[in-house]
Image 1 (cartoon, rainbow, N blue to C red):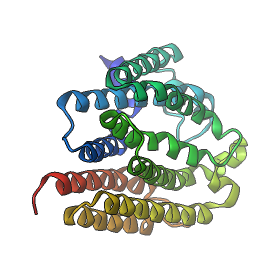
Image 2 (tube, helix red, strand yellow):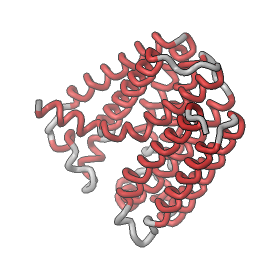
Image 3 (spheres, one colour):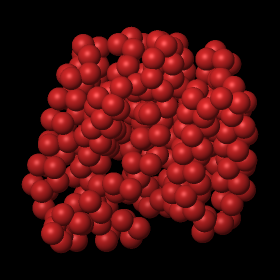
Image 4 (cartoon, helix red, strand yellow):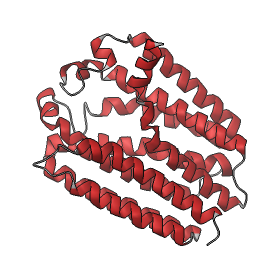
Length: 287
């Protein structure tokens, strides 16, 4: 049992709150476009597919970065650098997650199965990108942006414009908050020869670009709401999300990164939940 908890800690299972609401968001909006709510089977399969994909992605990230993590004071206490887990342990868990993801995609529809290898490739390549490009934040955003598009495809069997716009919104959102989080490692990245926007261009520039990315997120979500004809609850939720973005950027400054964890973990979790609940309300609650 202690080994199980160590694996769960290494995979940061609790961070699924960032991706799962947006996968469900894509699923709900896709189901709305077809005129019928998602079935229980679709909800279960989307959940299983996302959990499997995230398990594979986190395991791959921890394995690929284990030597870097051991040298970074912020991450040196992780399970692999400390020897509390073996590479084989996480590799087996990651391969299990990959198998579950592919099985769920197969059960959903042909399009999900056909595009699953592309999603796997992005997830597998991402951990290496910081070794050669500061665009790694954008690549992480694209990887997570696959969640809502996958939810859309799961119930429609097609790639719709709204699904693509939703994926881009999430890509900007994730890339934006990853820029904030990467500021914590700017000095280490420079010393280790790793690439990131904060290391290459400075913390202040990274925070400015994060603001622009989150403005793009709100703009894209507004376009989705307009195209889908969503009601007042959606727009209220988007206004709340905008307020949370303002708060997130207000508590992180170039000369004070002490509240990055609050911005990254707490505020972004609230944003994901607020947007999902507002969308669900707009679709299914009469106002």
